[in-house]
Structures are given as C-alpha cells and as structure tokens.
Image (cartoon, rainbow, N blue to C red; front, side, top):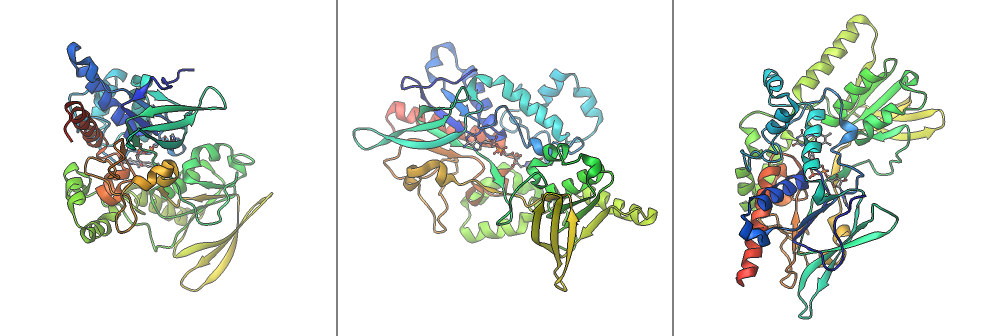
Length: 446
Ligand SMILES: Cc1cc2nc3c(=O)[nH]c(=O)nc-3n(C[C@H](O)[C@H](O)[C@H](O)COP(=O)(O)OP(=O)(O)OC[C@H]3O[C@@H](n4cnc5c(N)ncnc54)[C@H](O)[C@@H]3O)c2cc1C
C-alpha cells in the first residue's frame, strides 16, 4: 500500500487534513505551482501531503442519486476561477472522456452529480502521490523549539497499512474536514433509521428488500430531504412515502442571478471586512440560497406527483406539513413513529419500515482535532476562532506554524465557505499565503 513519507527527516510545508473537494483543489494548486518552477528554482517546491479518513476518494457517495444534478455551475470546478487555463478543469476532464461535445449539446451549466464525482475522482487520481487514504487524523500537537516557539505541528493519523498510527511533522496545516451529519438529540441510527448521507447504501440493503417496504418516512424540508422523498418514492414501488416537516411547504432555493453573487469571490472580501451585525444580516438575508431550501424543479415534480396520485387514486406520496416526529420506537418488526400535527397538537402513530433524517449537517469540532493547540488560537467575542482573509487562523505569537481552515469559516468568510463556489479561488489564496510567508521567512522579513 502506498504511503506518504513520514519520520523526522520528512518535514512537510503543508499537511492537509481531509481530502474532499476543498483540499483536492489545494493539492491541485500546489501541484501546478510545483510544476511551474524553473529547474534552477526547484528548491522552492512545496512539500505537501493530504490525509483522508475514507479508504478512497469519495464525495457524498450516499447521495449520488443517478439523476441528481450539481447545484453549482461546472465553471466553479476545482480550478477554473483560479486558473482558466488549467488542465484540471471539468472541461479538460470531459475532453479526455470524449464527452465535451455531448455535454455542450445538453445546454446546461449543471452536470450530473455522479459525473462531477467522477471528475473529482479523476482529478484526485492525478495527485494521488500527494494523498494517503484510510488515514484518519487523530491528533495534532505543537512542537516547541528551545526558545518556546511552536514552529512545527505533529500530525498523528491512522496507519492504513495496519492497526497503528503514523506521525508527520509539518510547518502548516490545512483543515478541510467538511461537515458531519446532524441528527435530533437521542437519535440512534440503525438499519431502519438513517441519515440522508447513508441513503443509497441503506436503501440497497433495506431489510426484506425494496418490495417489502410499505411505508418510509423522511424528516426535514431541505434539498437532501426532498431528494430522499423523491428517491424512495421511485425505489420502493409499494411504499407510501411520508414527508414530515414543520413548514407549510418546501421553500424554493433562491438561485436568482443577483442573490447568487453572494457566492462570488468578491463577496468573501465584503463579508470578511464587515462588522459582526452586517455579517449576521447578510446571513439572514441569504440563507435561502442554501439552507433548508429545495430546487424549484424538484418541488414542482413532487407537487405533480401528488396531484397525479390524487387523480389516479393510488396515493403513495404524502406531505405531513406543520408536523414533528415526537417519538421513535425501533423494534424487530419495524418502526413506530408518533407524529404531532402542530396546529392542533393531535398525535398519530405511523407504523413504518424506514425513517430517514434529512436534518442536515453541522461543523465538526475543530477544538477536538487541535487539542492543546486550540488554546493558542485567538477567539472572537462569540468564542469562534478568528481567521484571516487568507484563511489562516489568528494565533498567539509563539505559534508560528500556520493553521489554515477551509469550510469551517462561515462566521468569517460567509455562506460560500462550506460550498464549492470559491474552492478554486480559496485554494489559490491559501497557496499565495503559504508562498508569501515562506519567502518572508527565507528573507528574514516578519
Ligand atoms: C448531497 C450533497 C450535495 C452537495 N452538492 C453541492 C453542490 O452541488 N454545490 C456545492 O457548492 N456544494 C454542494 N454540497 C456542499 C458540500 O459541502 C461541498 O460540495 C463539499 O463537499 C465541500 O468540500 P470539503 O472538501 O470542504 O468537505 P467534504 O467534501 O465534506 O470533505 C471532507 C473530507 O474530510 C474527511 N475527514 C473528516 N475528518 C477527517 C479526519 N479527522 N482525518 C482525515 N480525514 C477526515 C472526510 O472523510 C471527507 O472526505 C453538497 C453537499 C451534500 C451533502
């Protein structure tokens, strides 16, 4: 099995924690930078390594529904907004696959999700020498020199080759560990109780097979919940599919052109420079571009299904709006769910074979990953980590090793932080920051 170099003679310029699209974009930016150096400047190459917990590259595999499309233009791929001439672009990928003309004829900006996943895999395979899979990072620790300065960090990860761990030393860290499933308190996942992130795998292995499912219930009113409703309705042909949510109806995603500018690189400048109250109001105004919203096409399609079933009398799709699930009993024969209709408080018990939580995601605990290092990170009045415009965490003076964040920066860089929109540009900004700081160190500046 291939592993990245470790040991005390292998000091990295940067180690990336997690290898989803964000750190993949960074790996590509570093690869392109290293390849661009003339022969007499090869000493300027950055030594980079990325550690990924999954056994191979995977981007939301549980939601790779065959006909689901991207919610971002293909031009917001891993590179184009940073370097439109890069051969790591989605267009280059299509060209290599012999599908460029076919894609063009689709007249769309929004490729299939499975196709973008294949594009990510293709790009990841081209920087495979920079990545170790099956290498969950367990701890990051400061390494202090004789003057008390923390110049390096030690990153401990699982050894994919065995049960042990591997330690690597680096001058900079880039944490891009994404979000984790959010579940209502007390939820116990099981073969019948799932989160949407598990959808495809769980549906393929449902107890008794798809034909045995008589009722599936989906909780939530966001894009993933609506996709799960649609998918289960098609996949379990005998089942009633109930969509339970507190709203009256799904809210459409605002993808109008002017609101969409909130995802522009320039909007990140504006957001980062704004006072706290302006940041909060921008969040509130533009939540509907991303949170608890559903693509209009999907809303219309589900509404058409509801009506069609009303006409034919074979009703399998059921919207249980203004409702909440109050109790879940998971027994050997199936589930028993108590659903409350909020306007009246009336409760009914539904027997179900499957319950899917479309309850979204939440940030991972950065402090748990950083351990004692966390104490050296500066915090704002709300106890959130301070992050510079260059995505580097502001730290105590004696910590000179760099900690960069991708994803966990909504509070400093705005709503686009957890999305793909600025991944390419952000990777370039992190690279620029690394280079500026390493040349300042070489010339003794700063
Ligand atoms: C179904 C779905 C569809 C989406 N579609 C879009 C879309 O169309 N457009 C858009 O802009 N956004 C979309 N998003 C938002 C999504 O967050 C981004 O697309 C993207 O995944 C962010 O990339 P990332 O690399 O920051 O995080 P992730 O893609 O979440 O990658 C993080 C990686 O870190 C790894 N990891 C975590 N902890 C550790 C650790 N301790 N050690 C090592 N590895 C670790 C994880 O295994 C994972 O591979 C979608 C989200 C979902 C759930």
